Length: 314
Image (cartoon, rainbow, N blue to C red):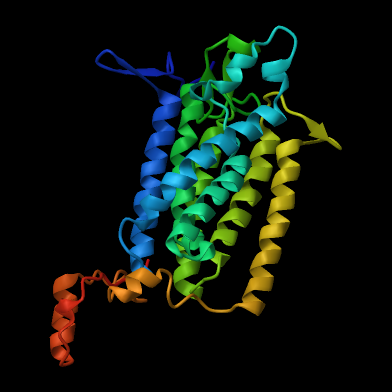
C-alpha cells in the first residue's frame, strides 16, 4: 500500500472561463517568460539595453519550438508514421513532445539572426540567457506532469508520481518522477552558472557552455531511468548518447575558449555604449539602485544622474 506519492492531475487542460489552456503549453509559456525576464536582467547588468533580450527572443523562441518539435518527431517517428498512426499528430505540439537538443540548436540559429540584426555578439547574448534557459526548463518540465508522461521505473518511494492514465499503453502505478528530478537539476544548473559567472567572470560563451555541460551531466542519468519508448544504440538510449556527446563538446569549448579568449567582453551592445549605458561587477549584487548611483557620483565629483543606463552585474 502506497502511503505517500505525488498525485497526477485528472486531466491536462486548465480552463480560464470558456477558454481551454493545456497544462503543457502553460508551463512552456511561463518558462519562456521567466527565461526572457531573467535574461534581460543579466543583459542590462552587463551593459546592454533593456528589451534587447526580448527583441532577439522573438526570433529565438519560434525557431526553438520548431527545432524542439522536429527533433522529437525525427527521433520518435514511429509515434507518428508507424502502422495505425496519424501523421497529423506530429503537428500537435500542445500534446507534448519537445526535444531540448533541437530547441537549443535551432533556437541558437534564431538568436544568431536576431543578434546579427542588432550587431550583438551571439556568445555574449547566450551567456546572459544561460541561467534563464535552465530556469525555463525547470518550469517547462512540469508540463510532463500534466500529461502524465516521461516518468521512470516503478517505485514505492514517498515522492513517487502516481500514474492513473492508461492511454498510450501506460500502466497505472507509482513511478520515479523523472520530470521532477530534471526540474530540480535545472534549478541547480542555473544556480551553478550564476555562481560561476560571478566568481570567474565568464565570457565569450563560456557561461552558456557551462550550462550545456552541467545540464547534459544530469540529463544522462535521468534519461537512463526513464521507461518510455526510445531508440537504443549499444544498449543506451539515444538521448543518453546525445547528452554524452554534447557534454564533451561543451567541455572542450570551455577549455579552448578560456585559453584563446580569456576574460569577458567589455562591450556587449555597441548601441547601448553610445547611449552611455555601462555594466558593473558589483552594483546589482550590492543592491545599488539609481539613488545609490547618483550619490556615488556626487561623492566623486561626477554627475552620474545624466546617464540613462543601469549598473550592475548578476
